[in-house]
Structures are given as C-alpha cells and as structure tokens.
Amino acid sequence: MLKKSKRTMLFSPADTPKNLFTAHIYGADCVIFDLEDAVKYAEKDAARDLLAEALRVMDYGDTQIYARINPLYTEFGRADVETLVPAGLRRMRLAMCEKPEQVRELDELLTKLEIKYGIEPGSCQIQCSLETPLGVTNAVAVATASKRVESVSFGAEDFTRSIGAQRTKGGHEIFLARNMVVMAAAIAGVDAVDTVWADINDEEGFREEVRMAMNLGFAGKSCIHPSQIKIVHEVFTPSREEIEKSLAILEAAKGADIEKGGVITVNGKMVDIPVIAKAEKVVRLAKGAGIIS
Image 1 (tube, rainbow, N blue to C red):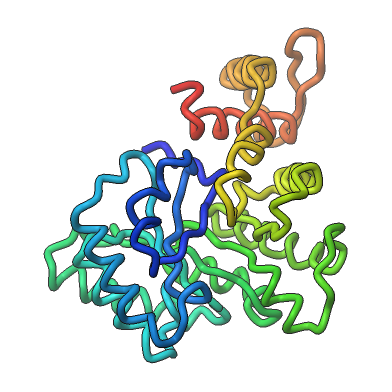
Image 2 (image 1 turned 90 degrees about the vertical axis):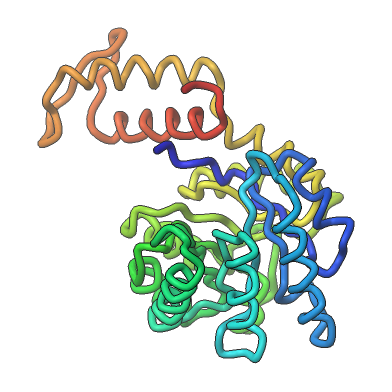
C-alpha cells in the first residue's frame, strides 16, 4: 500500500466545534485536532467529547485525521485514547514523548481497545512527538519501540524552552536536534515531520525554513494556519522535470545490479547509489502528492 503524504499537518484546537467540521477543507494532507496545549485544563473533557462526536459523524475524505492526545501520565491521556478509538480515531500524536516505555504503554492500551471493539489489530498508529532533550536523545529507541509508530515529529518550542535557548528564525539552536530526529526516523523506516513556524506573516522566512526542512530529510511540516499549507505543498511537491528525470533513473537502475557499488549512465550522466536514493525520494513525494500513480 502506498504511504500517504504528510507534507502538511495542520493543527486545530479540539475545543472549537466549527474547526472540527471545517479544518479539513483547507487541503492539508493531515489535520491534528489538539487536545493538549491548545485546550485549557478545565475544558479538556469537553473537548474530548466534542472530538469523539465529530469523528462519529464526519467524513473527512482523503484527509488523514490525528489527535494530539495528552501524555498517558496525565489524568487525561488514557481517557483520550479510550474515548476516541471507539469513536473512529486511528492516528494519534503522543505529546511529550521521551522514552520507549511510553510508546509501549500506549501500544498495549491500543491493543486492548482493538480487541474490545473488534478493530483490526495494529490499525491504530502512533506519531511520537519529540519535544525535550531526553526525547530527542532517545529518538531511535522511541521510533523503534513499536510497529505502530508510523512517524516522529519535532517540537521546537518546548525543546528550546527546556534547554534555555531562544528560538530564532535561523534555527541554529535546533539544528542538531532536527538532524537527530530525521536520522532516527530513517533508522526506523518512518516519516519525520518538522516543527511549526509561529510567524504567519513572514511568508518568505517560512518558505526558506520549509526548504531547509525538506533538504534535511523531513517528510513534511506541522502548520498552525491554513495560509501555510500552499507554501509547504509547493516546496515538498517535485516539479514535472524532477519527476521525469527520477523515473528515468529508476527505470535504468531496474536492469542494473549496483546495490553493492558501481555506476550506470542515464542520459549521458553518471548515476550511483546515492543518486538513485534521491530519485526514489522524488518519486515517493510525487506519488504521495497524487501526481503519479
């Protein structure tokens, strides 16, 4: 089965009824209904119930729906999962994930709920949100803690706060952490999703950061406003020329045995294993965006 694109993951507060019924119309690949930071303590139970009802009655089409659940060590985390899974939630972002034990605890809870409600085993998936120095340091262990982990995300706001750094648009203070998250995702064979950009008025700065995120190896970007979606899609969607070149490279590589080294020639240019890997990524992005089948 083709892995669906995660170019854009649009955050939407789960305590706003209008958003529960309209957030998907802006064209993001994924919508994350937030039960954690975006919802006040006193409103968390009500927000959970609102989201559960929306999941029961709404058809979100091709948009992948996630919920950012509260950590299981809080008084709200388990209730989030136990309420939303039978309502239809199949993807959840585990906030403030720091240790593989937290992932396995959620895995065990999901297994029990799948059995209880007759849900296909393993169909509930986890995105681990790495937002602290401990979480980033344990990124590989977290990403490989369960087969349910389908992606990891980086949260720069909490990360910089926890190390006492100032978040800057240049991003030098989070460059190492970003690389560690991407490398962990590559080791685990899952997607990595980059952090949010808070200044919705600085479109050029945002575009530059999205380019950097893509070049680092991220599969997509978390977004806080619908206006950011178009920019991310433009950057993460390869051009027709890139797609055609990549398809030609993969077609030529198909008949050559260079897995252990060597090169082939495509349209007069030397092509080796790293070039083939880049071509594979371009084709994956094109398929995920629905440009080619």
